[in-house]
Length: 269
Image 1 (cartoon, rainbow, N blue to C red):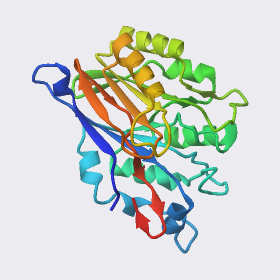
Image 2 (cartoon, rainbow, N blue to C red):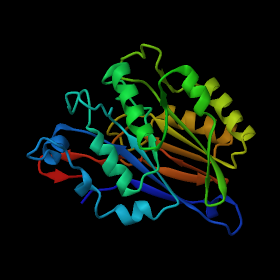
Image 3 (cartoon, rainbow, N blue to C red):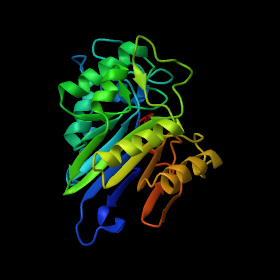
Image 4 (spheres, helix red, strand yellow):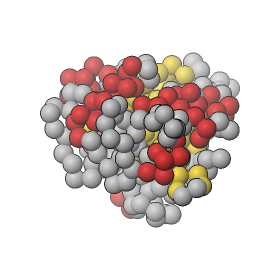
């Protein structure tokens, strides 16, 4: 069974009376070579469905579920694990079948297959009519998708997704990645409020890998988002371990959800 780093947020706790909706946020959905090897079938196809069988009722039972897709998904290309990830499209199928509605794509591995892999990932998500956020075919495509507000259980919830970097690979051929930039964040939050967002979830790829306590830069950015901009949910990923969370003045910060799925040797974590 998967060892989960999942948080379910009841919007009841965010000072909205007795109305309630549930959003599930899951951590990093990785793609290491051991995962590829375990999913490969004799006919050369890949089946990841068994990874999520036991948790599907929980994910699918939420009003909305969000996962960090920490790999490009490129059909017809060589699939690989670390250090340059690339997964088959069936990985998206398995995550969607488990109940995920939104796929976050702004992370340090999003350009592992450069612009071609970024666009192939977006194509795969669009073909399946899945929400996605954080990377875009072009800057104009970003402008057409944002602000992104979804009606979830009667609440108007706005979503944002940013990454600290892309492992030194720069965007090329016109693709756009949402990097951490405080002025951009301010503009994006303002746009969401104007679009009617009652609650904003900013999902941020940040921090230091394998550190159990958040870095001061995470704390500074969390204060900016929560205290200065009024963002209700700050949800972190990237460190690959679970880090502290705190709830203050009706706002929640989760510094790191850790890994959602990571296969090493013959065990799934």
